[in-house]
Image 1 (spheres, rainbow over the protein chains, first blue to last red):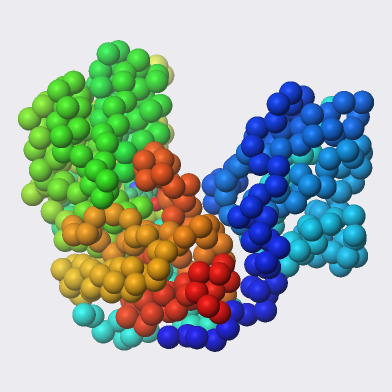
Image 2: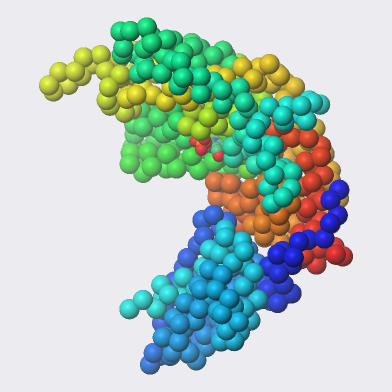
Length: 147
Length: 409
Ligand SMILES: Cc1ncc(COP(=O)(O)O)c(C=O)c1O
């Protein structure tokens, strides 16, 4: 049996913080009085997200999600909701662009403090098939914010 | 068991390394690798025999036609078809089932009729029937499965009380590995007056199949799951049924005479083979059948059963692992989950060790809902897999457990 330790890229992918958000998702559940909601799924692995937001005066007052799927998609959703509260729509979309840049391997984005806990997901950029998982909630956000 | 290490050497792709590791290919239910003999048959066809079939009046075209028709006869023999003209070349199981739905179904299923499928069917044996039923005002009845993943015979009986026009089921489930009592199901369905469609995508590569002994009416198979090329496959049918069916696709080759306002059609099977066929696929599939027959389907089935058995034994020793499907009556497919580790995460971790498995719903969403899971991880074996592949699978899974805190790192 192969008992070599998991390789570093894997340990970078499955960090404590990611597993913590996966197992104890923040802001999970339906949102009362949502003004926007979008459901997306990733047919490849069956990840699902239903993102619900309450937006007033161009500010995201509250955001929650319902979803199931892999650790990457669910942790990304949980981390995202933490970050979005009380941001303007345009700030939120800027964060989505930073997240997407980080997934493409942009190192400055991976060091950008505005991404908060999400920086733990930087390792996903080394696993091309998983980038879709990390971006699923963000795609739901950009869909929801479309005028 | 087979000498899998020796067989493995026949498959050029299996010599590759993935992520720096020996390739452990355990996604055979999705598609199989191709032996040198199949690759050579395809290349030889283009080097020595290529011409359009059933058309040319020159020797080369006659040889191409002979190669194509010899492949048909080979498939007929392989599954003991009623006759070679009861073998229609298709792109695979999906197209075969759509052919039955679009021709037999369109002609015979009407308002108020019922079509029966099972909750363990692949989407390709569900969606064509859904579309047909929606368009014709018929009802699709899905037969339930038992907790251990077999067709629920009592619900099957209840469904048959509706006297369905057509009953479809898989011989072997791609998601659970269940081997269904196909002959028994066909007999019951016939007694209720139904025509029987068997999805043979997962049985043809792994079991000795005899369609006449099964006594179904239509049998669909995919060549790429049995060492043959992508885009090869067949519908095997009772000739008298095919003969009475309206055409499926219109075009060249399927006609007898074309008048300005109507046409008469060619004999079977050509009536169902409009346009230039994939001759390369047919020839490659024939070579695959030769390869399989040299080894023997009984021996292949036994080899896979042993590997699946070993996998189940090792997997169930890992705390937190759940294996789905029945204890007995199963083929070389092992579906499992591991605690709260999502199957997609499992697949990523295993991939780093060169272990290829499938993660997802396996094109069987109705089944996943009944198992109460969004997805499973699935290892599926073939003749070139060795006991070492099972150990690689479980060894790598232990790493996944360590990363997710199930076992000490
Ligand atoms: C049971 C079953 N039916 C049908 C299919 C569809 O086969 P194909 O994609 O070759 O048409 C598959 C393949 O995944 C299968 O496993």
